[in-house]
Image (tube, rainbow, N blue to C red):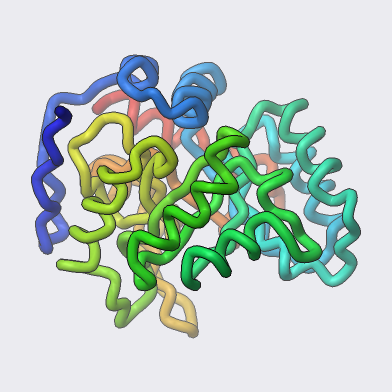
Length: 271
Protein backbone atom coordinates (compact mmCIF):
# COMPACT_ATOMS: atom_id res chain seq x y z
CA UNK A 1 0.00 0.00 0.00
CA UNK A 2 1.25 3.45 -0.90
CA UNK A 3 2.34 5.43 2.16
CA UNK A 4 0.86 8.92 2.59
CA UNK A 5 3.13 11.90 2.11
CA UNK A 6 4.28 13.81 5.20
CA UNK A 7 2.09 16.80 6.03
CA UNK A 8 3.18 20.14 4.60
CA UNK A 9 4.78 22.71 6.84
CA UNK A 10 2.93 25.87 7.83
CA UNK A 11 6.02 27.86 6.89
CA UNK A 12 6.68 29.26 3.45
CA UNK A 13 9.70 26.97 2.94
CA UNK A 14 8.73 23.72 1.21
CA UNK A 15 10.31 20.39 1.99
CA UNK A 16 13.15 19.34 -0.28
CA UNK A 17 13.54 16.11 -2.20
CA UNK A 18 15.42 14.87 -5.25
CA UNK A 19 13.95 16.33 -8.42
CA UNK A 20 12.37 14.08 -11.04
CA UNK A 21 11.74 15.07 -14.63
CA UNK A 22 8.16 15.52 -15.76
CA UNK A 23 8.55 12.47 -18.01
CA UNK A 24 9.70 10.36 -15.06
CA UNK A 25 6.75 11.60 -13.03
CA UNK A 26 4.45 10.67 -15.92
CA UNK A 27 5.64 7.09 -15.55
CA UNK A 28 4.83 7.14 -11.83
CA UNK A 29 1.14 8.00 -12.14
CA UNK A 30 -1.80 5.95 -13.33
CA UNK A 31 -3.89 9.10 -13.81
CA UNK A 32 -4.37 9.33 -17.57
CA UNK A 33 -4.75 13.11 -17.67
CA UNK A 34 -1.73 13.68 -15.42
CA UNK A 35 0.34 11.52 -17.76
CA UNK A 36 -0.90 13.57 -20.70
CA UNK A 37 -0.04 16.86 -19.01
CA UNK A 38 3.43 15.78 -17.88
CA UNK A 39 4.31 14.64 -21.41
CA UNK A 40 2.78 17.75 -22.98
CA UNK A 41 4.86 19.97 -20.69
CA UNK A 42 8.05 18.20 -21.74
CA UNK A 43 7.14 18.28 -25.44
CA UNK A 44 6.25 21.98 -25.48
CA UNK A 45 8.87 23.00 -22.91
CA UNK A 46 6.12 24.88 -21.13
CA UNK A 47 4.80 24.96 -17.59
CA UNK A 48 2.76 28.11 -18.21
CA UNK A 49 -0.99 28.31 -17.64
CA UNK A 50 -2.82 31.41 -18.86
CA UNK A 51 -5.87 32.75 -17.02
CA UNK A 52 -8.17 34.10 -19.74
CA UNK A 53 -10.64 36.07 -17.62
CA UNK A 54 -12.54 37.88 -20.37
CA UNK A 55 -16.25 38.51 -20.93
CA UNK A 56 -16.37 37.96 -24.70
CA UNK A 57 -16.44 34.47 -26.22
CA UNK A 58 -14.93 35.77 -29.46
CA UNK A 59 -12.06 37.42 -27.58
CA UNK A 60 -11.40 34.30 -25.53
CA UNK A 61 -11.27 32.05 -28.59
CA UNK A 62 -9.09 34.53 -30.47
CA UNK A 63 -6.59 34.80 -27.61
CA UNK A 64 -6.59 31.05 -27.04
CA UNK A 65 -5.61 30.55 -30.66
CA UNK A 66 -3.04 33.32 -30.57
CA UNK A 67 -1.38 32.35 -27.26
CA UNK A 68 -1.97 28.59 -27.31
CA UNK A 69 1.52 27.71 -28.64
CA UNK A 70 3.08 28.98 -25.40
CA UNK A 71 0.77 27.19 -22.95
CA UNK A 72 0.40 23.83 -21.31
CA UNK A 73 -2.97 24.78 -19.74
CA UNK A 74 -5.58 27.42 -20.51
CA UNK A 75 -7.71 28.51 -17.54
CA UNK A 76 -11.24 29.81 -18.13
CA UNK A 77 -14.17 31.26 -16.19
CA UNK A 78 -17.01 30.33 -18.53
CA UNK A 79 -19.62 32.11 -16.42
CA UNK A 80 -17.96 35.45 -17.23
CA UNK A 81 -18.92 35.16 -20.90
CA UNK A 82 -21.74 37.56 -21.76
CA UNK A 83 -22.21 36.04 -25.22
CA UNK A 84 -21.90 32.34 -24.31
CA UNK A 85 -23.35 29.88 -26.84
CA UNK A 86 -23.66 26.08 -26.51
CA UNK A 87 -20.96 25.46 -29.12
CA UNK A 88 -18.33 27.33 -27.07
CA UNK A 89 -16.81 24.17 -25.60
CA UNK A 90 -16.51 22.48 -28.99
CA UNK A 91 -14.80 25.54 -30.48
CA UNK A 92 -12.35 25.81 -27.59
CA UNK A 93 -11.52 22.11 -27.73
CA UNK A 94 -10.61 22.40 -31.41
CA UNK A 95 -8.15 25.17 -30.55
CA UNK A 96 -6.77 23.13 -27.63
CA UNK A 97 -6.18 20.14 -29.90
CA UNK A 98 -4.53 22.38 -32.51
CA UNK A 99 -2.03 23.88 -30.05
CA UNK A 100 -1.86 20.95 -27.58
CA UNK A 101 -2.92 22.44 -24.28
CA UNK A 102 -5.41 21.33 -21.63
CA UNK A 103 -8.53 23.31 -20.69
CA UNK A 104 -9.00 24.13 -17.01
CA UNK A 105 -12.40 25.57 -16.05
CA UNK A 106 -11.83 27.46 -12.79
CA UNK A 107 -15.32 26.73 -11.44
CA UNK A 108 -14.26 26.24 -7.79
CA UNK A 109 -17.08 23.81 -6.92
CA UNK A 110 -18.03 24.15 -3.26
CA UNK A 111 -21.40 22.42 -2.69
CA UNK A 112 -22.45 18.97 -1.53
CA UNK A 113 -21.57 16.07 -3.81
CA UNK A 114 -24.93 15.68 -5.53
CA UNK A 115 -25.31 19.38 -6.32
CA UNK A 116 -21.71 19.70 -7.49
CA UNK A 117 -22.14 16.72 -9.80
CA UNK A 118 -25.19 18.35 -11.38
CA UNK A 119 -23.38 21.69 -11.75
CA UNK A 120 -20.50 19.86 -13.44
CA UNK A 121 -22.55 17.79 -15.87
CA UNK A 122 -25.74 19.80 -16.46
CA UNK A 123 -26.95 23.38 -16.71
CA UNK A 124 -26.19 25.61 -19.65
CA UNK A 125 -22.41 25.17 -19.51
CA UNK A 126 -22.07 21.36 -19.35
CA UNK A 127 -18.50 21.75 -18.13
CA UNK A 128 -17.72 18.04 -18.08
CA UNK A 129 -18.16 17.87 -21.84
CA UNK A 130 -15.27 20.20 -22.70
CA UNK A 131 -13.05 20.98 -19.69
CA UNK A 132 -10.16 18.62 -19.01
CA UNK A 133 -9.60 20.01 -15.52
CA UNK A 134 -11.79 21.50 -12.82
CA UNK A 135 -11.14 22.50 -9.23
CA UNK A 136 -13.02 22.34 -5.94
CA UNK A 137 -12.97 23.59 -2.37
CA UNK A 138 -12.74 20.93 0.34
CA UNK A 139 -15.07 22.73 2.77
CA UNK A 140 -18.00 20.30 2.06
CA UNK A 141 -15.80 17.29 2.86
CA UNK A 142 -14.85 14.32 0.65
CA UNK A 143 -18.41 13.99 -0.70
CA UNK A 144 -17.75 16.78 -3.17
CA UNK A 145 -14.84 14.82 -4.63
CA UNK A 146 -16.94 11.67 -4.84
CA UNK A 147 -19.77 13.52 -6.59
CA UNK A 148 -17.50 15.16 -9.15
CA UNK A 149 -15.65 11.88 -9.67
CA UNK A 150 -18.86 10.11 -10.72
CA UNK A 151 -19.08 12.49 -13.66
CA UNK A 152 -15.45 13.17 -14.49
CA UNK A 153 -13.67 9.85 -14.02
CA UNK A 154 -15.47 8.01 -16.86
CA UNK A 155 -14.51 10.90 -19.15
CA UNK A 156 -10.84 10.77 -18.02
CA UNK A 157 -11.06 14.25 -16.53
CA UNK A 158 -9.04 15.54 -13.59
CA UNK A 159 -9.66 17.49 -10.38
CA UNK A 160 -7.47 20.01 -8.57
CA UNK A 161 -8.12 20.73 -4.89
CA UNK A 162 -7.86 24.29 -3.58
CA UNK A 163 -5.28 23.82 -0.84
CA UNK A 164 -3.90 27.35 -0.58
CA UNK A 165 -4.85 30.72 -2.07
CA UNK A 166 -2.84 33.85 -2.92
CA UNK A 167 -5.32 36.43 -1.60
CA UNK A 168 -4.67 38.40 1.60
CA UNK A 169 -6.34 36.99 4.73
CA UNK A 170 -7.05 33.57 3.21
CA UNK A 171 -8.11 30.75 5.55
CA UNK A 172 -6.68 28.13 3.20
CA UNK A 173 -3.52 27.27 5.10
CA UNK A 174 -2.22 25.06 7.90
CA UNK A 175 -4.62 22.28 8.88
CA UNK A 176 -6.85 23.14 5.90
CA UNK A 177 -3.96 22.49 3.52
CA UNK A 178 -3.03 19.23 5.23
CA UNK A 179 -6.62 18.02 4.91
CA UNK A 180 -6.57 18.79 1.18
CA UNK A 181 -3.47 16.61 0.79
CA UNK A 182 -5.18 13.80 2.71
CA UNK A 183 -8.29 13.95 0.51
CA UNK A 184 -6.11 13.96 -2.61
CA UNK A 185 -4.28 10.84 -1.50
CA UNK A 186 -7.58 9.08 -0.81
CA UNK A 187 -8.89 9.96 -4.31
CA UNK A 188 -5.71 9.89 -6.40
CA UNK A 189 -7.55 8.18 -9.26
CA UNK A 190 -9.35 11.50 -9.93
CA UNK A 191 -7.46 14.20 -8.03
CA UNK A 192 -4.32 15.04 -9.98
CA UNK A 193 -3.01 17.98 -7.98
CA UNK A 194 -3.55 21.23 -6.13
CA UNK A 195 -4.03 24.94 -6.41
CA UNK A 196 -1.39 26.06 -3.93
CA UNK A 197 1.46 28.47 -3.25
CA UNK A 198 4.18 25.87 -2.78
CA UNK A 199 4.93 22.19 -3.08
CA UNK A 200 2.74 20.58 -0.43
CA UNK A 201 3.07 16.88 -1.30
CA UNK A 202 6.12 14.73 -1.96
CA UNK A 203 4.06 12.30 -4.05
CA UNK A 204 5.46 12.80 -7.59
CA UNK A 205 2.13 12.14 -9.32
CA UNK A 206 0.50 15.27 -7.84
CA UNK A 207 0.90 18.47 -9.89
CA UNK A 208 1.15 21.82 -8.14
CA UNK A 209 -0.49 24.85 -9.83
CA UNK A 210 0.21 28.31 -8.45
CA UNK A 211 -1.72 31.52 -9.29
CA UNK A 212 -0.80 35.09 -8.40
CA UNK A 213 2.46 35.12 -10.38
CA UNK A 214 4.17 38.12 -11.97
CA UNK A 215 7.70 39.01 -13.02
CA UNK A 216 7.80 41.44 -10.07
CA UNK A 217 6.24 41.15 -6.62
CA UNK A 218 3.21 43.28 -5.79
CA UNK A 219 -0.49 43.32 -4.97
CA UNK A 220 -3.71 44.71 -6.40
CA UNK A 221 -6.45 46.83 -4.84
CA UNK A 222 -8.56 43.77 -3.92
CA UNK A 223 -6.00 41.87 -1.88
CA UNK A 224 -4.42 39.69 -4.54
CA UNK A 225 -0.73 39.23 -3.73
CA UNK A 226 1.73 38.53 -6.53
CA UNK A 227 4.90 36.47 -6.22
CA UNK A 228 7.66 36.14 -8.79
CA UNK A 229 8.32 33.20 -11.09
CA UNK A 230 11.54 32.53 -9.16
CA UNK A 231 9.67 32.59 -5.83
CA UNK A 232 7.11 30.05 -7.00
CA UNK A 233 9.21 27.67 -9.07
CA UNK A 234 12.67 28.09 -7.58
CA UNK A 235 12.00 28.56 -3.87
CA UNK A 236 8.55 27.02 -3.44
CA UNK A 237 9.03 24.16 -5.96
CA UNK A 238 5.64 24.44 -7.63
CA UNK A 239 5.18 22.91 -11.10
CA UNK A 240 2.92 25.22 -13.12
CA UNK A 241 2.50 28.99 -12.89
CA UNK A 242 -0.87 30.60 -13.62
CA UNK A 243 -0.51 34.09 -15.11
CA UNK A 244 -3.36 36.37 -16.12
CA UNK A 245 -3.29 40.15 -16.23
CA UNK A 246 0.47 40.50 -16.70
CA UNK A 247 0.12 38.75 -20.07
CA UNK A 248 -3.37 39.93 -21.02
CA UNK A 249 -2.65 43.61 -20.37
CA UNK A 250 0.79 43.61 -22.00
CA UNK A 251 1.40 45.71 -25.10
CA UNK A 252 2.38 42.48 -26.91
CA UNK A 253 0.66 39.50 -25.20
CA UNK A 254 2.46 36.95 -27.41
CA UNK A 255 5.87 38.34 -26.55
CA UNK A 256 4.95 38.44 -22.86
CA UNK A 257 3.65 34.85 -22.92
CA UNK A 258 6.88 33.72 -24.60
CA UNK A 259 8.87 35.55 -21.92
CA UNK A 260 6.98 33.82 -19.10
CA UNK A 261 7.23 30.42 -20.78
CA UNK A 262 10.99 30.71 -21.22
CA UNK A 263 11.60 32.05 -17.70
CA UNK A 264 9.47 29.36 -16.06
CA UNK A 265 10.93 26.51 -18.06
CA UNK A 266 14.49 27.63 -17.40
CA UNK A 267 13.91 27.51 -13.65
CA UNK A 268 12.35 24.04 -13.56
CA UNK A 269 15.03 22.74 -15.93
CA UNK A 270 17.72 23.73 -13.43
CA UNK A 271 16.05 22.12 -10.42
